[in-house]
Structure formats: C-alpha cells, structure tokens
Image 1 (cartoon, rainbow, N blue to C red):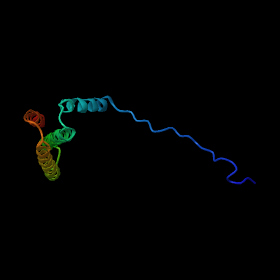
Image 2: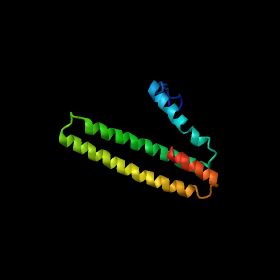
Image 3: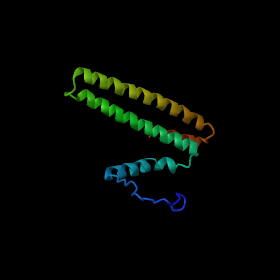
Image 4: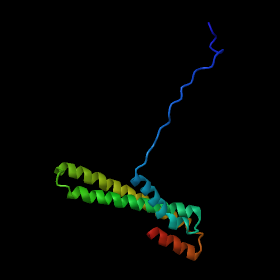
Length: 129
C-alpha cells in the first residue's frame, strides 16, 4: 500500500469559461470610450474627468429611464394596476438618479475650484454636453 504523500495527486484540467460578446455589446463598449474621448483629451485633472464621466453616465441612465417611462405609459397591454406600479417604480428610479446627478454636479463644483478660467469653462461645457 502506497503512502498518500509518495505519489502526486492526479490533476484534471478543465477548459476555462469562454465569453462571446455580441457585435452590439462590442459597439456599445466602443461608443462609451468614444463618447468620453472629449473628456479624456480635455487636459483637465483626473478628478474632474472622472466626475464629468460620472455626470454623463447618470444623464444617460436618466434618459433611458425616461424612455422606459414613456413606453410604459404608451403600453395598452398593461392593466391600470400594472402600469401604475411600473410608473411608480420608474419615477422612483428617476428621482434617485436625479439626486445622484445633483451630488455629482456638487462634486464637480468642488473639483473645479482650483481650475483656471479657461479650464473651468471647458469643464462646464463638457458637463452640459
């Protein structure tokens, strides 16, 4: 009888997980990078750039929720109760996103305090874009 330490354990190698991204997913990643390229190329401090990207993302999420809200209100297949619940949920999500946007804009204001006039104007215009 062999001792357990005298022979190595047999190992089994399994294939790793393979992830395939759709063309739409790859395009979305490219679009996100491209949509922030103006911020990245602005020459603004990194902290300001990060807040600007956050503001842009929150605005995008608000627009998506508003589009969902419009779709729910136009959906005649939902019962009145289903529509009311979905509308309330979406309005709540939009309210949270609006609060996040205000917080991010406040953070941007603080981050911009040390910027020169032209850089502050650049940051403000990027925040509005």
